[in-house]
Amino acid sequence: MNYMIVTLIGLLLSFNNNLCSEIKNTAHMEETADESASGGKACTDMEKQAYIETVFGETMMNGLRIKDCSITADYRPNPTGHRIPYLFASIRYPQVSGMDDKSIEKKINNLLINAVTQSMDHKNADEILSLFHNIVNHGFTEFWECDNEYNIIHVGEDSISVSYEGASYFGGLHPSFFHDYITINLTNGEMVPFTDHFSKEDVIKAIRSLKFEMIEGQYNPGGYKGDEPKITEGFAEAVKELEDNTETYMGNTYNFAIDDRSAYIHFPFYDSLDGYVILKFSLDALK
Image (cartoon, rainbow, N blue to C red; front, side):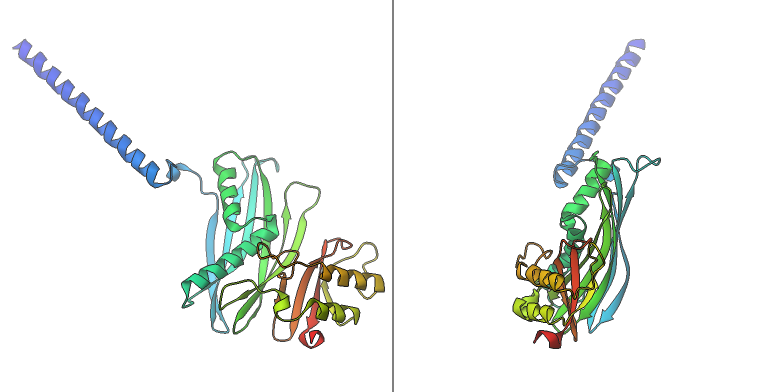
């Protein structure tokens, strides 16, 4: 009788071990399958959320539906001070929706978000979000701080113009301030340079004739108004040097906005404390 009990216990233990082994193998297979399905990245649900995407609301402008969006991130593992790693981001940007051609809508939205992240750190949105993820989850020792606001300058029949204004600080002595523009063709989803509307020569002629208003740009020293001959000629020379480069819109003919009455042109100007100026021209002055 004792022999039979011992034998039965042995059989049960053997069965239990086999069952446990099978469960472990099945779990390992499921884990491997999950890892493969996620591109070789296991346990993604255990990683910290690096940022939050929010839609605050939606408005209509000239028949175009525009969402007010943001990306926020706040990661300070050392609460006693701004030591690396450190992450604070408040990125505001618009996104269009409801367009018939979804491929054009996607191109426009990519440009609208990439424009602000390029202003912040010369990177597109995918690169910025990947950096946020790596700072929070993989120990990247980065100091990253930036915030901005945006303004819809104009929505026309075939284009949208947006400005982005903010500050970025990556651990130097002072933050860097930016105020950039982008104009996008709503028909093909491409960036629009100001040379699609008027030439550099038209702009230079208006500058030399003092037919402009200075929107932003502080000079060193003195806080010039922009009407001194030396400064005016500096504006003209800076416009001459602007390039056409679709890889970025900063420092070239794409950094501009236009509405029914005026054009706003941003260009580098290193006699300014900001490193750039923004001039406003009436469209009549550029004919």
